[in-house]
Length: 122
Image (cartoon, rainbow, N blue to C red; front, side, top):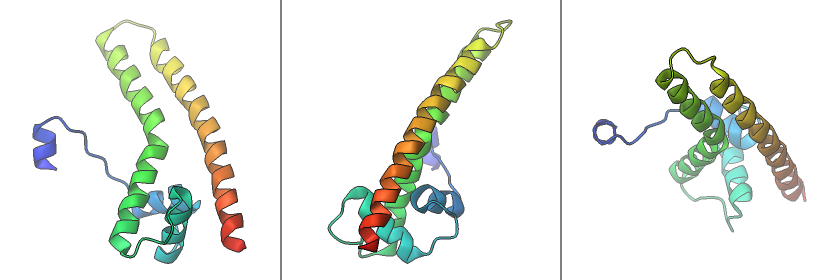
């Protein structure tokens, strides 16, 4: 992480509960449930054999689920700071735009999860 920071590469940190919630819909999922959902969401032929591989893929899914809103807030905050005296509307507009995209993506994600759960139930 130190080397990434020195080179300007952003690093992210997620709690286990946030990762599990992003992948399974709740933060108290077990490793087997996370593995099955990773397999289903990514269309893998089998559950990743190693828990570490499943965990890494779950973190990637978590990151991708949160990226649009985080990026929009970061960009808008930079614009607001760069333009002191501005009314702050760029930040509000960016948050509204990203939130609407996130809500739409969340709906698609919920549909995807529902389809995945239906496949698992068969």
